[in-house]
Structure formats: C-alpha cells, structure tokens
Length: 498
Image (cartoon, rainbow, N blue to C red; front, side, top):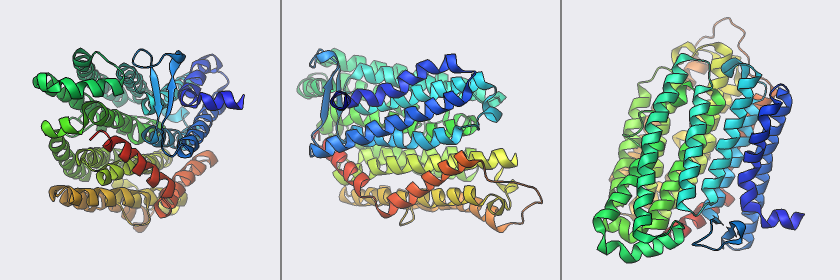
C-alpha cells in the first residue's frame, strides 16, 4: 500500500482535495464533519507534497515523471514533479492548512447558513486541487483546464460573501477572467498549430526549430499568453478586477486568492515562457524587457494606489498588485539569481499575504470597522491578531530576518547581474512605499487611544492559524535553507531552457 501511494504521489497531491470536495455537499447538515474533512484534505495534501519533496531531493533534483494511464508523451498526459512543481505544491498545501483552520466555525457571519458554508468548502478544495495540478502538469491543454477550474472557483468564493459588492466584484472578475482565458486558449492554439504538440517539452523543442519560419505567429502567441495570464494574475495595468474581488471576498477566500491563486497563474506564465518559448525566443522578441518594465510599473503603481486606500483590505488588495510586480520582474531578468528571488518571493508572499488578510479579517469581524483610522487601539485589545499582522507587515516590507527579505535581496542581486539599474530603484522604492502604507496601520493600532469596547482576539482555531503563519514568516526568514535550495534548483530548471 505504501509503495502504491509513493508511486502515485503526483496524482495524490491533486486528487485528494478534489475527491473530498465532491463528497461534501450531501453532508451539508453535518457542518462539523464538513469542516473536519476539509481540514483533513488539506493536511493529506500537505503530507503528500512534503513526501514528494523528499523523493525529488533523494533523486538529486531529477524530476518525478508520471504518465497517466501508462501512455507516454506526446500521446499521453504527463505529470512532472520537479523542483519547480514541488516548491509550488508545498506552498499551496502549506498555506491552505492554516487558512482552512481559520475558517473553521468562523464562516457563518460572512457566508451564511451551513449549505452556503459547505459550498464554500467545496469551491475551496477545488481551487486547492487545481492549483496543485498546475504545479505538476506538463500539458498545455491541461493547464488551460486547470486555469478555468481555478477561475470559476475564485469567482464562486468571491461571491460567497453576503454583501452586494461581492456579487458585483465576482461578475467583474468573471468577465475579465473569461477574456483572459480566451487569450490563453488562443496562445495554446497557435502553439499547437505551429508544433503539433500539447506536451510542453515536445512543443518547446519543435517551436525552437520552426519559429524562424513563422516569427509573426510566434510573436502573436507570446502576446496572447502574456496578456491572458497577465489579466488573471492582475499584472499592472491589467489588474482592475483584483481590488474589489480581494477586498469583498470572505477573509479565508481573500487569503487564498491573494496568497495562492494569483501565484498559480504566474507559475503557468513562467512555464510557458521558459519551458515552451525558451530563452532564445524571449531575447529575440525582447519579451524579457517587456516583463521587466511591467514589473517595475506594477511595483510603483500598485504601491502608490495602496497608499491612497482608507479600507484595510483594499489597501492589502492593491498591495498584491505591487507584489505581483516583483514576481514578473524576476521572470524578466533571465538569470538564475533573479529567478531564484522571484520563486522564493512567490513562496514568502503567499505566507505573508495569507497572514495579513486573515488578521485583517479577524480585526474587521471583531470590531465591525473596515477603515484604518477607525482601528485605534486594536493592538491592545487584540494582541495576538495584531502581532501576526505586524510580523506579516515586516515580512512584506522586506526587513532582514523575515521571510520576505531574502527574495527581495536575490531580486536586487539579479538586477545588478543583468546590468539593470531601473529594477534596483523600483525594488528599493517599493519597499519604502510598502512601509509607508503598512506602518500607519500598526501605528494606529498600537499608539492611538483605544475606545471602551470589548474587542477580542478570535477563537482558538483562528488564533492557531495566525500563530502558524506568523511563525513561518519568522522561522523561514531566519532559516530559509530548504526553501531557498528548492528555489535555486527550480530556477536552474527554468534556466536550462535559456
């Protein structure tokens, strides 16, 4: 039995949450059982991802290749669990555990009755399973299918909140995400037309051979892929759906959308750019310069827009636009150091942003306040929640000894290696602006007089979730070893195509 599970680990990471998602709806009246099964699904996924990481480490970085149904590529569907897939699978499953723990017994006020809560968990597990599938799939059309599952799940999670703005935000997200999907599908269609393959490895090899004969078609395919995933990942200036969606969604949904869903689209974009198009094409078509400029613009514009927001969750939502800029910038540097920084920052931002959104959700639920100036004294009334928010803020700013510092450092070094000064300026300015929009929240919470009301930290599951995430921000900032090594090896995998 153990050998069977070990041999099917790449599939188990994907199907464990999907399988449990499909059996939750008939159990809606037994909400405690639903919550327990959802939590067990995420724990099982984390265990499978962790074991998969040890297998990849034991292979000295050699990928775990799994052929569905025993059909070899290019005819069959291939799952490839290399360092890139493993690091994202660990991030997805690792963040999903405390998020679903935070949701335990805490969703009724935001979502509604037990039936609506159950549907929330169904969508949540579908999202987690699809994101895990993005990590390991090596098939272009499967990426499109998984992208659609993630998109529809995200729309459902946004609309789950009982608020008029939630329906409007979900509808806007659905329309723009559908437009992005059309571009992604168009890009895949053009790649298939040129290469005759949907397997990413075979498509990349064939495209490297034929692209000089069809340069305009290839340019169109690259453009479609960047625009499609740019819309879905909220790359500036294609971010217009994100602030409303992330700010109005239930708190666990905001955490998973900002922390994981956006990163899944960026991971797919990196797979396309490096694994299919390759470094030669990226340089010939100046795609890396476009990515660098988009990243710089996103960092500065997202930070400035965050500064203008009075609502806490909207400020965090605009902050996500800025943080996406760092990841896009790292992908455009076309060197191992920059990619290492981008991938490590992907992991750190997922943990940090989940911490911030969950803490913000707990504060809003306890106080009934959403504007920053109304949160005076909340740090003394809700010490654990505000401590988690403060730790997450330090990580997002990029202070040393916190999880976010190392990724930004590698991005700085990678920019200098590439001989680019503008990204260096943008990274430093982005950190300063990040401090400018997060430190006032901390100052208001700790140093302004508290009103005479009984605000309290949330319940035990919520406290434990915040404690786990805040501890990860500190521990992985002080001892980043395994994650940093995975990021380096994953960057080396991508650079093999350059």
